[in-house]
Amino acid sequence: MTRTTWLIFAFFLTFFAIDGSAAVQAAERPNIVVIISDDSGYNEFSLNGSEHFATPRIDSIARDGVRFTEGYTSGTVCSPTRAGLLTGRYQNRFGHEFNIPPVYSETNGLPLTETTIADVMQEAGYRTIALGKWHLGYAPAFHPLSRGFSDYHGFLQGARSYFPLEKPTVLNRLLRDREPIPETFEYMTDELGRAAAAYIAETNDRPFFMYLAFNATHGPNDATEADLAAVADGPGNRTHKAMTHALDRAVGVVLDALDEHHKRDNTLVVFLNDNGGVRGHDNTPLTGFKGSTWEGGIRVPFAVRWPARIPAGQVFTKPVISLDIFPTAMAAAGVEDTPGEPLDGVDLLPWLTTPREDRPHQTLFWKNGSRWAVRDGDLKLVVSNSSSQGRARGRKQPQQAAELERGLFEIPRDPGEQHDLATERASDVARLTEMYEAWKKDFPETPWGPNNR
Image 1 (tube, rainbow, N blue to C red):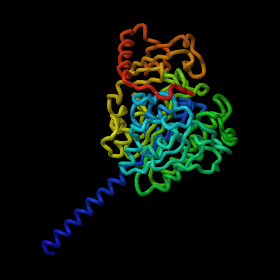
Image 2: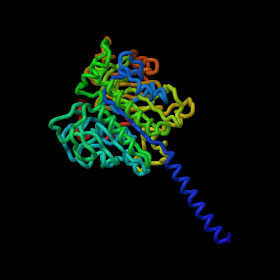
Image 3: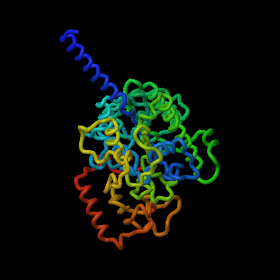
């Protein structure tokens, strides 16, 4: 072999080695599936110890990974939580503090100035798939395909019937990408699970990011006769149990698809609810409901698994928040930075892969109009403007709870927020109030105003 021939051979050997290595690295990037349920009660998952709601498939995510005992959302109602999750930023920073009214509008939606996790993942080479409830704007500019997603199968409004509609509206009709499709499904929860599994089956050439937003178990309270027959009599609302049974089955369809297509080990799966359970659902042992900043309005079932990276069977007791999903997904995908504004969430992988004593967050904030809360370390200061904001604990109203509009609580010892420390720790009340005022001082107003349904 002449020297020239050798140099040419070495060049091509090096080129293909590098190219092959890049291909291997691309193949090793994980798929990411974020599954969010809607308005379910904290005590309506066996994941959280419920004896009356069986959710074995959802429970398996925690069993095979991590269950967060103090998992929070950044919003107290549906649309703000979704805005925070998809941007990794407190939604209050960009004026998305309340639910978007169900009115077609060219201006009301997740601000176009915000970068979404789908934007970042698509730029990184991921197929980006959204399914289910959107609730982040109804005009074409706010459609999922305009916000970083390459595929969409779902509906734009915040709620709709679980059964096919004879005359769907422009907001609640079922869409495939931007086009309405015939409503030939039997039950929406099953339809979303089926569609998610189909996307998983057909996506083999590159990693995918999937955002699966079930409307279960948000109203209306629709359940099939088969699911009503399948759930046990006894404590707990039977329709809620039947809807949860369907939700768990649909999550199982997605997990089974990952298994069938050999994607289980290298897929990061996240499951959480979008806010505290709505009044009428069971939030035991927490105080409050959807819309409030008590624990029952913001603490949710929250679990993560990634068999290739995260040890199974963990119970994580430090506070985490839905804002953490964005930076954690970025880190898992090997994306170092986002072109958007700084994120409020943090990458949780260092805590989930190696034991650590510190906590991901020292301080967390919540604001929904005049209701707000600050958690700093183990202390939480919560403010509610009236008894109408869901102060009731579980299904029973505690004595004198209606008169308590502000309280200080040590959350690990008192997750039900029953022992107010405000009087004896007035300096902490003042300190946390000052932190809250500093946090919110530059927030813009929400253009569409409060609409907390």
